[in-house]
Each structure stands twice: as structure tokens, then as C-alpha cells.
Image 1 (cartoon, rainbow, N blue to C red):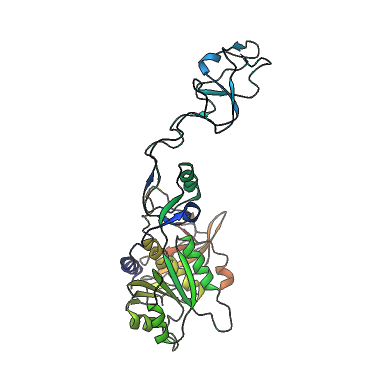
Image 2: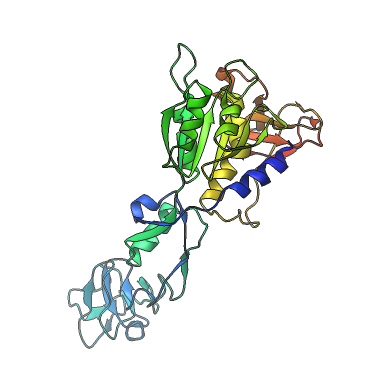
Length: 362
């Protein structure tokens, strides 16, 4: 199945999960379920941006150490963040008055050192839009506006993975970290070796989607595709993707199931092409704004590809551009150096060195 068709078909299986209210600290990295806008503007009164003396700017015009200005009453000292007294509109520096606090030795422009009413958070300003990944800075603004929580969509995924014989399961924790970075959450469970047991595990409740890692090839013990067909429906097995050609997907118990190869480079390629869009669809994420420019870097070396296949080439960003570290069958010691990837479309045979290409950060 061509990659574009696979991505579209898999996205159709993913329905946005039910929103849940969480505390602001827990909302970072999740996708907002609703718009959040400011009601009344903040601050309600003019406030101090720094410590200083509150004055009316019109009263101290022309003041200097050589020509101090006498005001009717001594200015009030205001700490940063506090509202200014009525009748004042600016802040003088701490050393702007003489021994007698009524003699002012510096002038100041109206509004200087202060925040006008409604200027920090204007009435009606949208702090978070539905479909956006929530950032720590947005949470800072929400907290300042008095919000204590936020409705988000954070998909829950179950990872069914078996460790390679005689080796620890290193791939599942990486997948869980990628899912968290995409706005989801994941639990890791062992993948049953028997096809019937795996089919039963695919039907177990408690997740919005399931990732099955390994067992996707033509080997005698590879039962992932057959188990998905038993448990529900196998929509695709074999994607025009390199590495990652043995990936597949379908549906069981009314939720998407993604089959990822067990080899790290193939699993990463299939995750980039299919897994990320799946989590984004489950989270109800909005498309990336067109105004955001893609990351484009020149290739430091030639990249070759095969017509009809989407090739994933792993890259390392260096001062001179993007250095290819490998594609299909990339050994782990080279894959560990990658921090970006290039997706070569099926209509291309590759790119010569120096070609500016759009890269996808890992």
C-alpha cells in the first residue's frame, strides 16, 4: 500500500478521544480540547512592572537633579506587581527623589514602568486554541488569568512488545517516550507469542489504540498480522516504505491497531510515517499552521532512493546541513546519531549533495 493511502486510511480509524479535565501542570504536551479566551482584561488596574515611586507624569515634566520639581505630596513607594495609587500613571526609579521626598529629580513618560489596565491579558484574547499542543508558556498565561485546569485530549495507547531473545526490551520505552512527546500516554505489556493469545490481548479493554511491536514479517513465528485479522480487521500489511515495509494496521474492538516491525530502524520509520499521525488524530490535533516554515537544510551527501517506495533516510544535523547516517538496515550505532529524518517521496530517485530538503526532527 502506498504511504499516502496508508496514512489517510489509518487516520480514518482514529476518532478523537473524549476530553478530560486536568490540572495545568498535567496539560503541558497534551492537545487542548477547547478554546480558552480571557473574559475581563487583566490587570484590572494599572500595575507596576518594577519597584519605584508612583507619580503623575504630567507633574514632573522637566525635573532633573539640577532643576528638581516640587510636587504637592510625596510619591508612594510601589513594589513590582502592585497596583498604582489612584491619580498616578508612571514609576520613577528609586533614586529619583531627593532628601525631601516631595522634590523630584527626574522626569518620566506617562505609563513608563507600568502595565496599563487590560494590557497584560486583553479581554477576549485567546490563550489556547482547540487542537493546539499546550506549551508551558501557555500554562503560565492561563495561570495568570486564574485558570486552574484545562480540558485536553490525551490518547492512551497500549504497547504489546516482546523483547528479542536474550536481550532486554529497549524499543518499547522509546516508543512510550515518542508517544508522550506526541501528546499521548502509553503502558507497556508483554506481547503473547501465540497468535490466539495475541488476538485476545488485542480485544482487552482500557486503551484508545494498540501498538504491536515485532512479529510483522513472513517468519514462521510472526503472528501479529494473523492475530489482528482474528481479533478484528486487517486493513493493510505491507507498506511501500523502506525501512518499515512489514508494518500494517487495522481495527480491533473498535479502535486502531498499528503493527510495527521489531527492528529499531524499521520501527522508527513506521512510527514517523504512521504512528505520529495516528496519535495526532486520536488527540484531535489541528493541522500544523501553514505559516510555520518547514525546516529545510542542504544534504551533505547524495541520497539514493527507489521509485515507487517512500524511503526514510535518517539524518544528523551539522553546521553544514543534514548529514545522512543511513536508511534501510541502519545499524544501531549509526541510528543513535540521528536527530532528524528525510522522507523521500516515491516519485523521486533521491537527491544530489547540496540539495535543500525538508527534514523532520526526531
